[in-house]
Image 1: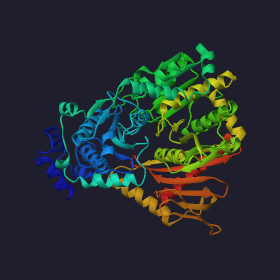
Image 2: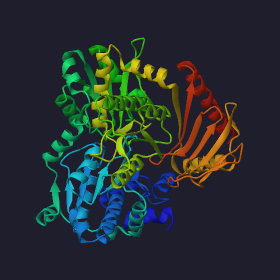
Image 3: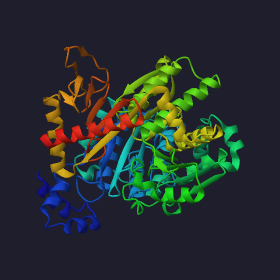
Image 4: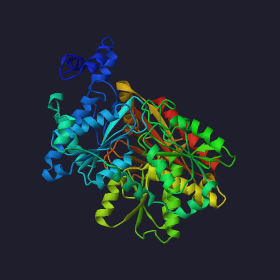
Length: 577
């Protein structure tokens, strides 16, 4: 069935409601838009669904969410009665249609005899991860598109350990979802019937309380925070998302007395009216927060994304201007702070481990070497950090201390298995207070890291390529790099070329090869003869192709110049393609 036939089916089939048909009738003369909506089914990948909200097979709506939920339910049912009885936990963030998608998911689960435990209002991703573990559920679903633009929403699936579903289980679930070919196969039940059958449960506040206590236990210097009292000021923005209540509660209960919230961005709003693109990686989201910080003379600004799994930090530099730290900077600072404080307190395990992704700063390696801590590299995506935590628990060989990725996500404990901006916010504020007690800003702390470990800096270039044509361009660029290994970037020779898709890791100078134990992924990684690295990968959640690079300079200026040169070199190669 081609896209036109699918479009016609949605218009005439009684399965689809009048509002959906009205939306589709409005595009009847726009063949390109019809094709975009119907040329394929919205793909259920290893992390679930993510797409633009709207009517159509390639869009997020109650029907595509319904197919995903029925497929997940079928998989849970196939695992046996005990697995079914444990049920599923469900959460959602502030995005448009999030409550509706969450409710639809809960009722489909109930219609299949699977108990659904759903939060009564929006919650951060880490609270869903925690709830799965705390309630002893088989699985979890959170409705979110993280930091994507307002037109997006998504559907993320978790398993019993609280982490996103790992391989091979993810593939097995995908097969079940793909088997649900007809929307009439989706089982339905009313809310009243689901409650009467004891298959629909609202998660009570005791779960929130337990999560908060676990996060507060990650603090390293509570007494210091209380001692600073009125002398330390925090500006916080939830960026219209789910972090507002839990983050403010954590900071208040941890002793931060002066927390100023950006009023214009305080309340949940799926249109994200003050920012458009609600990503703390984008400095523009902090414009209002910086204005408030200047008014209050704040020591630190923190901002969480819509599902509160990522947090950005803004600090005063050596000129007194507020600057946005990158995720690599924040992660390196947290790694140093956590390891140094735990060592000082005699709480650093001899078999401790830190985990980062392959596109995250190499400064982490030098920090871990300093403290005798094992560093593990994993593929991009926090699910791989969660997998590693589970592996440590099962083998007992290592004890997880900290994990983070360059895209502003980290986790300082094992109470959850996805990145946690609530806990990260607490530790960033505490860390800033720690440096203030020593007469330093957090920026001074960053400069101290550079002096101690070397001037490691990173850059990232993102190409947004939307729709069918965009996907084809991304595939062409990846194929070109894969088939024609670059000999140099910015005049610096390539020494190692690592292809995580073909599993060919080769030294292009000597012919030496390496083995790789990480999962297959569409990623290319190059190491240059001066230690510079470059990584290329399509985003798994957005229509983007991403280029990451890291350098080690002799000064901040030298490192910045190397990043700028790499940026130009990548642009030149893209022009040639």
